[in-house]
Image (tube, rainbow, N blue to C red; front, side, top):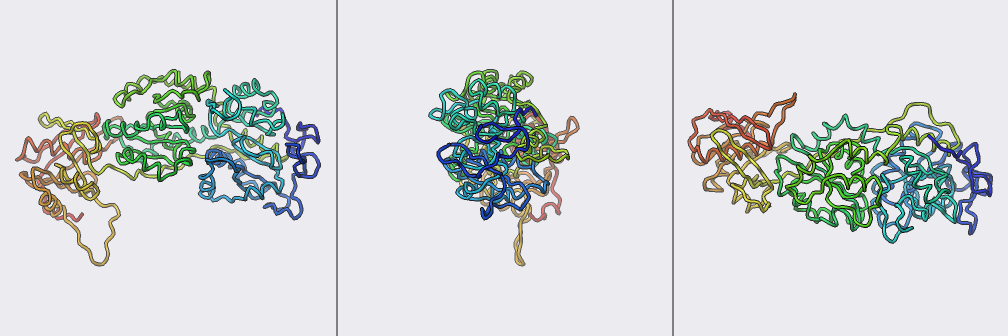
Amino acid sequence: MNNPNSGQRAAGSGQRAAGSGQRAAGSGQRAAGSGQRAAGSGQRAAGSGQPQEVGKKSVLFAARSATALHRLLDVAPVFAGDNRIGPRRFTLIPGSEFGVDALTAIEQAGARTIPWEQALRQPYDLIVAASPKGDLDLLTGPLALLPHGAGFNKSLAGEGSPDSASGLDPAWLLRDGRPLADLHGLAHPGQVARLAARSPAAAARAAVVGDPVLDRLLASLPRRDTYRSALGTGGRRLIALTSTWGPESLLARRPGLPAELTTQLDYDAYQFALILHPNEHSRTGEYDLRQALAPALASGMLLARPYEEWASVLVAADGVITDHGSTALYAAALGIPLAAACDGGSELIPGTPMAGILSRVAALDTPAALEPALAAHSPQAVRALAAPAFAERGRSLEQLRTGLYALLGIAPPTDAIGARPLPSPAPASRTPAAFAVRTEVNGEHIRVERRPAHTDLPAHHLAAEPEHAAVPQSQSAALLFRRRARQRRTGPHSVTWTAAGWTARALADHPGPRTAAAELSGSRWLLRSAEAPLLTVRIEGSTGEGTVVRTDPAAALSGVHAWLADNPHPCAPVTLYCRVAGRTYRTHLAPATDDEAAHEL
């Protein structure tokens, strides 16, 4: 790592001297009125109550928001397995409206916190923060400052210096004209140059350490299929919508876009996920977010959690619809096709990597423009535009370990260190219980398109799962289907429907020209219509390029229902060819056996 500073501050000079990475001798307390952290030994003072074992180094992670906390959690593994490091402690820097979720994230990580007031009373051998805002200068100990995003693309009105990038603003990086941090870790040499143009004093403490979040994304690429399987993506294209926070964000400027996409595009062709900035989660709250996004969530859209899960969803994605938030930089670095939902307005700084990307990718005006917009993407060109945001790829933790241990004044461990792959996302929990279906029947070939039932687009029939759909939807549905219960528990006394019994009851409860189908296994269903004999429907996967893709069986059942309308007395067995989202699924109809009719659901 190119770090011209040794990590030790000489007494009274405001500069770090070569050597141990400890502060010059002194009281260990902040000098009254100086605005600087006073020099001190960095050792535990008798009776201070510092949570440190004798002879071990103390490390404090100071976070002002959930966003900063998540970055610190990605960096913490640099100290893993080193018994020279005492208990790692986290503290919440007061003063941010976005700090509400930070403590929750710390608890979920199983880490320990100390109150801010206690953190101020004791020195630390190292303090690590991911935002320069707040009263960091009141803490005692060498400070390593890391960015909490990528690219430094935004300038926030009313905060700091006009037109200065948030995170590179001298108003926050200097205290009384002197650098706040002993080490300012940046992701690319170009960022050091941008900082030097604004503040040579702050840039003197900067070093290029790479981006640990990008490294986790890169390390997770081999797990892409695993993530898609967990999300239930199947053969669909997973499209992530990424929204930063504030008045220029996607969600603020186009709040209806998630619902438009999920209700107007083919459900069997696309799966949608929303990635929100952690500040938006903190500002709005999970309950209000889900209320505001209810139409899109009911249509099957996923809402990614703000730590780790958003990144695993990004790895799994086939395309990204973005605003000017830094998540798009990670997508660009991975080569994921991008489309722009909005332009960033007054917040986007011209000449930044994100400004270059938004000028290059296609704008998304309507849901129908999604496919052409993604097809226009040039991975090589967009990767090149994102390149100035990232350096030292794959080596960020190694570079950080070198810099952080220099501040601690001890040699870093010699074992190799690398980014941790991301955990799998939580399984998708919502599937629409009712669909508006369009079909085209041409002999034994049927094309099927489905959208959530509350779409405003025309449809040929409604298909519903009565156990979960609204009563009016079930009453209006021409196809009623029942999926097999995955974890149905029964007590000592129980009543279980047979496949024949449930389909007969469904038609009796909903008279008219309807079809009812019950799942026997993943690919086999028992089907009953008003006129046709009891049938077994077996749906094959679609094969090609060494894979087998399976569609939602309910889509093929809608195709069978449409075919039966033209062929009410089929001469089974017969094979139909259901075309769903561009793939053909051979669907075999045969007379049901007695065992199949008696199958317990």
